[in-house]
Length: 106
Length: 120
Image (tube, chains in turn yellow, green):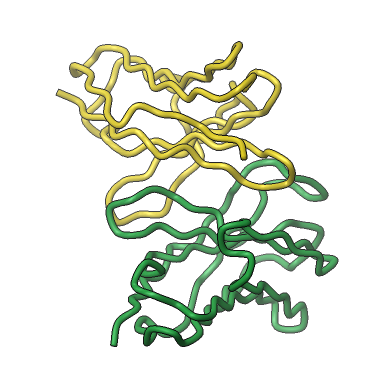
């Protein structure tokens, strides 16, 4: 079965840029979504189809997908960005989530 | 704007059946995929399964033998049944919808989630 690998945690200084990776076999051939989850809340979509932001998501959030790695980049990190982030793809008509990355803003 | 709300018992005994319902408001079953996703305390997201508006279903292979998802278009609801539950099934259960009609796209919107604890 297809697997997605994310780092357990990523730290970023306030105002700097954070990159969260999601690795999977030839992931570039798939559409990757990213979800942000704050404590006690349901996940919320921040990136869909690799690079697209839903309405209401700041331009500071961007995505890329190449080779075996998809990346969520958060520019000018703010304290409110501190959350868990999950990548997601479809594979053989099943939904696959990464294990999640905890972003800490220092 | 469509909203989803999970409902059902918050406590289920081991070996019994977990039953949850998701009520759809502000929209209809339409031509979408409808999902159940769960999250054990302190852990990541796990896809349970989905049902298409036609009634076709697909389940996570790790749960397939115990899970069933059904749709009630007259009530604008869909439901989850998970049988023979154990402590490992304790989780927040989310219902959700695919963002677009007629295909597998991305999960949006989500319900707020409901915690189900399996304990005697």
